[in-house]
Length: 433
Ligand SMILES: C[S@@+](CC[C@H](N)C(=O)[O-])C[C@H]1O[C@@H](n2cnc3c(N)ncnc32)[C@H](O)[C@@H]1O
Ligand code: SF4
Image (cartoon, rainbow, N blue to C red; front, side, top):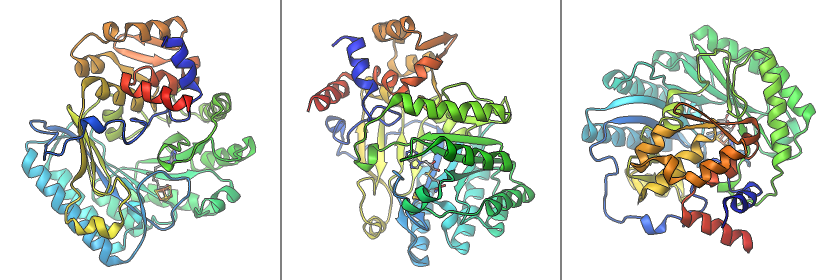
């Protein structure tokens, strides 16, 4: 099929976004049943710790999480997590850390004693491993679970960046989605408390493309952002890939919502290239944690700890126990959140995964592609690059390939041009059904 024709199909397909592969069976033939360590001989890592508990489960959320369920379960979770992390460090030393993120779920939902133990543990890990100069640990939280006591623990453990979700100020959407809806004043107070405790960077997550989200809703949300004045804002386009929910996407509509956020955030003094989903008050700062930056743009390997966490190395990808939505108790019974599924991937799949995730930031690097392919990407993907350049969807500056403003409108389809032939065929077959 011609590149133009495939592009036309991909741009209207809701599956084409930052998620890859498109279906859990796409990689079946690469699945290994042997006990393979995908990180054999690797020493440069991003670490991610998944805390899969939340006070309430938001219906729009695509992450693996469980409702908070008693201190004993949390105690057991942390015990297994610590054991897994110590074991990994022992087996892969010497390690150089590029990023260290704790996410979820909601890490700050943990009972005080468990949270405190998690923070002490993180501090001991961060202090004992060698790090690149700009390694910046970061932790996710929600406004209804962050307390001064927890914030002090976070600071003491060495975290200076915290990321909290607001998503939208539309109360009826929040209610319908089973998400807590706090007063503006309470959110503002919590942010002030975090700054007083010493947290230097607050990031706020917002979402667009939500059901019935209007420009008035967005204006309300932005008003609150102006009052909080966080150092960073991350803008997520709603994805339904993992929720088995089919939607009709209207690219124009999503693009216009993004533009509305973009224009207003720029007016408020944030910096961002049009097309990236992170906004920062500091021009030198990329607006995201070092974990995400090194993972998305530089393709540094990442190791995920905890239920359902994903890991990626130079040769493959693995998903921990729980990825297939097992019950919490079943996962805890394993006594290790080791890999449930491991895939040894060919270069074209590793390349496709890198490009898909880089679309969050609206850019990718030729040198990273070269490193994955061990060949000149401009030769291997000559037709795709020619199409993108001719249509002015990308702009190449040295090693960097940036999506242009028009290109960003179709970022999912641009990523799809770099899918493997197998996944492209799967998408076309599905499209014809
Ligand atoms: C791992 S979640 C955890 C954040 C935290 N528990 C909270 O609710 O604020 C990180 C962010 O992912 C985004 N997110 C959640 N579900 C999403 C979906 N279906 N599509 C796109 N982004 C999503 C939200 O903006 C959320 O703040
Ligand atoms: S959005 Fe946050 S609080 Fe809501 S279910 Fe997802 S992880 Fe939990």
